[in-house]
Length: 120
Image (cartoon, rainbow, N blue to C red; front, top):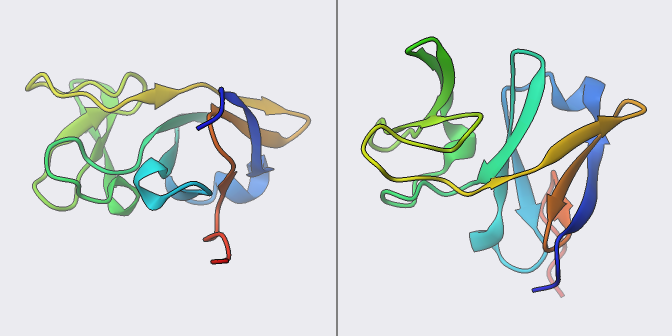
């Protein structure tokens, strides 16, 4: 994979309508991310739960100890939406996000898209 670069994801107005958006990675689905929108901020983390591989983009956003967490739909593990940390010591890798001129970007090592890339 290439070095990390800012990837354009889409418009802030569209992406903030869902709390969890799957970002498909061009290289392979195991590199997919989940884009979380909570409390007016975007956060990007690995899409597959580090516990057992559950799809975090299908999870719910929950308040835990006053902080937003994404809950894995398979086993209920909670990951801090801002840090990727879990109370049990497992962690999701996080990736920087930014909004410029109403457009959302994620710093990542391969191309990302909100819909699957066409198969060659």
